[in-house]
Image 1 (tube, rainbow, N blue to C red):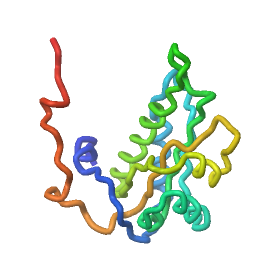
Image 2: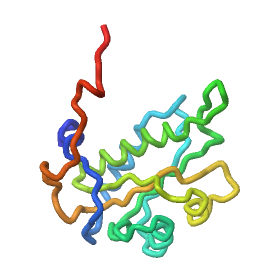
Image 3: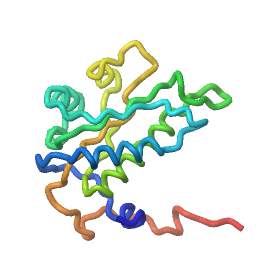
Image 4: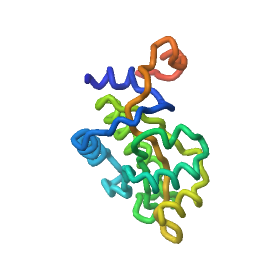
Amino acid sequence: MDIYEVFRSRYSYRAYTDRPIPADALKRMGEAVSLAPTACNLQPFEILVVLNDTLRTKIASVYSRGWLQSAPAIAVAIGDRGVAWKRAEGDSIIDVDIGIVMQHFVLAAQAEGLGTCWICAFERAAMDAVMGLTGTERSVVAITPVGYPTEEMRADKRPGRKPLEEIYRIID
């Protein structure tokens, strides 16, 4: 799939089939993640693709929308604030790094014909506890279900976008 078609077709899906995800697709998605740029190439992250039903249920218990567990996989983006590059003021940019990494992941999933829905609306301490990360610099920054959507997103159902002139300018 052409990269611009991937951009145009990506959507946040909230309903998935139980069709298994091919291992070769998961591998290609991992390769896309490994190519994501991070500040100073520190790569202060780990993406865990959780297929295990028990752990998926625990993750879903922290994010109370029932549709999360309908996907056959949940990807968990873990960032390490202690390793991530820091601004002059000392602020970690782990959220920026994870944003880039997750974008690579969700776009690669789209190219594979899989749906995702980027989620940050959870209590971080509870999600960290589920993932066994308490007491460390490592923390869950984002999650996404991964799977085959139950239906194609029709263009007329997609949310509207601001006009390009409002969000993008070229300054000579």
